[in-house]
Length: 298
Image (cartoon, rainbow, N blue to C red; front, side, top):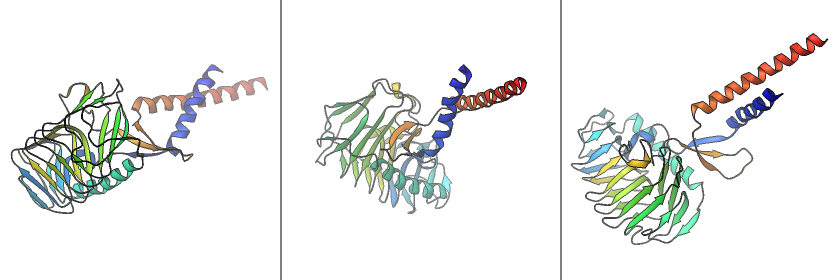
């Protein structure tokens, strides 16, 4: 009886899980890009990029080595290659459009003013009003010790930071994700120290010395312009964020089968599936034991 009590919930979880639609926020090709444009990618050397750099359906990449249709190496790029309208870049662009739609589907959340400077925000969804600047100082994001902390900033218009602005993430974990869903263009001011994934409808510009310590610059229909910048999807050495922190590659949006609101969660660990398999096997063992007992009694 105790075995049955243990096995049935696991079996239900196994049966229930697949009927929930799970959509990765970042598709497998998209998650490999630190920089992705649609029309052009322009770079004023020397930049430091960890992850792929690419453009599609355009082919123009300046400031990096590039060959149309072929992924090539560049000394400014580690942990990836430069893709000028390769199949991988084209797939990533399709996934970017999907990702922006997925993020939009999560809703508006809490409405904030235009300038985020001076705020400390816990994980959640926020809509930020348009303004001449959206960050004129330091924004602190406190993960509250959650290894899978999730922040989404819905920017219906632009994302603009003043020179020297800072996004500071504390108490987050290796599975965390930070996303900026931008309705038009994004501009990071000179020497801005930024964090998270910028997914912009049109173009993204990083002014001289701006950095994205852990995240991406992904432009859906426009261009990406770099000026001696650092962008990393690897995120190693960023303290509490961990080796995958803030990148959000392990986060999915789950749509419940009953039509409830979508929620963001981490991809289940392999151990979870193993436990479900054990539970299913245990349920089968209990069933066989019951049949043997009934047969003996007869």
